[in-house]
Image 1 (cartoon, rainbow, N blue to C red):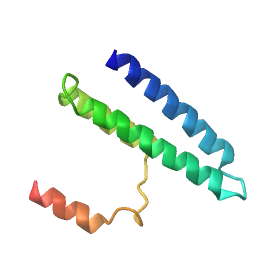
Image 2: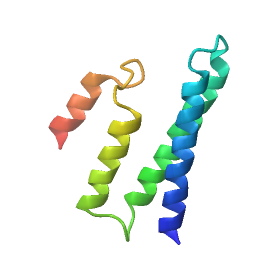
Image 3: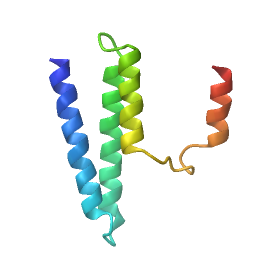
Image 4: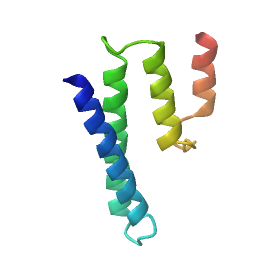
Amino acid sequence: MRIHHLKELIESIKKTEEMISLHKDDKLTLMTTQYETLKAKQVAEFIDELAKPPFQSVESFSLINLIINKYYPTINSDRVKQKDLKELALTI
């Protein structure tokens, strides 16, 4: 049942990404912002599901990495402070 939900989430993310591309050049950035917000919510839900049992595994974390790299190839440094991330990495 959960695998079906995850597949549906992936399809939703793909469709949302298509809508972002479609509206990328529009002068109204509101549509793009709304789709970006929706995509972030969808990706977060996908990650949350993969991080829980029974999927939680080295393979699922690799899949999480894959989806992040695919849909967020460059992180906006305004949203994430690189210094803070480095500090967390050092803590690990």
